[in-house]
Image (tube, rainbow, N blue to C red):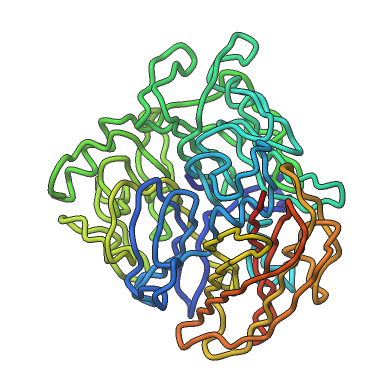
Length: 468
């Protein structure tokens, strides 16, 4: 699911949240998620970072890199949101698969970029399952969101985590439904063009203003129907304003035009972004709309375009799909299943230069055996690794003071009883594996870890684990 939001009001009053890729050497980068599984081409220095699954966020720049790599895992989500359901499990997915992932874009006149490199606080999410006490169609901000809402993470001294950018209840009104009547939707794809028009697709067939619309179709919410604030929040949508512009058979036809092997029926449109190649297509309502790049339920690691009546996409002059669905097209060594979210940015540095990722943990008689895998660091460069041990019970953790003068990401939680700092070198691939045996008498407890990349002066996203 993808979008274009600009986090400030333009002269015409149009706001957008922009498609999420980043510029690397003048090119574009895909940022995406999957509800399948796979492995990286690089092997990620033999660490668990090579193993990809639901809850992971990846980035890959066709033509500039060979392998996809993780930039966010379930451990990061658990550090940002805490143990949301209070069951003591910091390894589980809080909200199932990721349906949408986008980055807030700031105007070129805003220099320097407020957070340096892109972070989780600049991204827009929609997820498979409601979480944080949210209902089937109603949000529980600032703690949780419904599966049909678009939200982003925020940092708050009170531990508040969620800011709703577009609520499911507003979308329901736009398609002629009502949460009060028990209606419920799951947004499965999202994009926004430079004019501010919002494009959506749903996980299931829905009635849109009384007309049946399949889950592989796309509707638009015209900018004239949206009330948008300066931070990109859409606070109101005119009821019954949604318009179907592409139906599922249109996408089937476009996929078939590529000659792809196997089924040519999309099943579902999983996500979409504005095609940077430009151009327009004629919608079913007789209006012209910008070309889209999109991913589907049934066509694996391929990104398509609405251009030319349907073709594989093109990014950095490299095709983003093949007739035999080769995993290497998107940087995978192996891949099964489907992509679930797709984003693209073109005007900011590479995201999350240094991150704490997966861990393997054993609790043995007063000792915590833990493995942390840190990626996207400067190759062969010092990395400062920070571990906090805190008394912990299940539940959302709160924010502490910034570390090393960095505002993002925060180092969690309060209070930190033990604060351990190590300086270790990354390898030639910019990866560091850290193994430790921590002896202490704190039980239960929470381990929160982050890494600071000396080479790029960036503090990575945290990872959290809870031990009974």
